[in-house]
Image (tube, rainbow, N blue to C red):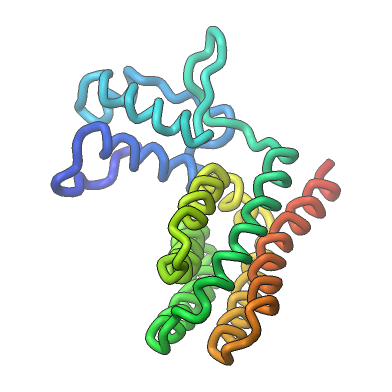
Length: 223
């Protein structure tokens, strides 16, 4: 697999980190895939040190694990952990969105609408990578307006740990993508109308919990 063109002004470690992370999140490196330091060093034309440092960062995010006698591997999805952390994320997301609501401008609402339309196009093209990136942009725009920086930091920490499995949900459960953009549309309507904060918080929280419900249903079907 050829690496993407080198972005300017990135350290060797950052370049390896970004590329390997993207491969994990896109599903190119699936659960259990062996991440071999020497092979990546050769591919990226770097020494083993920046590769090892990049893998440590991925391990800290929960995307890579070390197994005895096997080395670094892409972490398997753990349904129980996903349920727990998505529930925490739902609570944080709901509160952060409610706090951000009064700070959102008309231009912000317009941008949220435009991002959601692009998500629909990505979904129609079965482009899960772009869909996931746009989904992050949608919520990041709202988070930027949240006045509680500590809350946003906590929210991002949890969301980062869930990146890989959340993208997997949209690949394995295509109908969840359609539900998600519909829920985004409903949230935009509440934000645009200046709805009460408790209604906005409930809608944003339930948006995340619906992903958990879809994942549980998919698990039962494939048990």
